[in-house]
Length: 209
Image 1 (cartoon, rainbow, N blue to C red):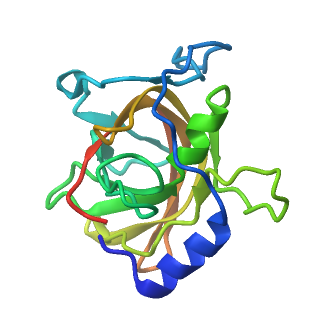
Image 2: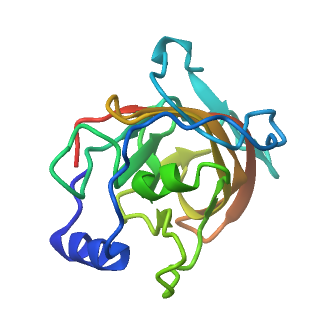
């Protein structure tokens, strides 16, 4: 979904002078996450035909089947002229439930991620004031939609965890890796529950900025 102009100005001011990714290959190194996916990213093509159809959530109460539809959609580069390459992009994730609403969106600064490929991205994180601190993740725009769960509408009220990238396709605006985290849901009546995710996390090009 398009970012509102005020959000657009805010996130660009927070980014400051973030440099664009070079697109040159990065060697895979370092350890692995709990799911076995290497933390370091390797720049190259991503075979989206191998992407799993969903990432299941394990919740602390019976809410039926709840999952993120994969791959999530990667919007066009907000920063710079190369719109079809990864730089600073919104990622939108839909639910597999009826209507496939957007239930989680996030802003990832791939130009920074590619410069620090030996570590995973933690979210949410505070934007650092120091110019020596990288800004890899920014708070998402409020474009998530309510999801009907057991007859009540719920939204993701908080998400925290880590994303580890195994492969990043900058020209193709795609990635593969893993997501480990906790999603808290709040309903229209104030009822809440939380879900754990730990598994594959893939992104494919989306038709939005």
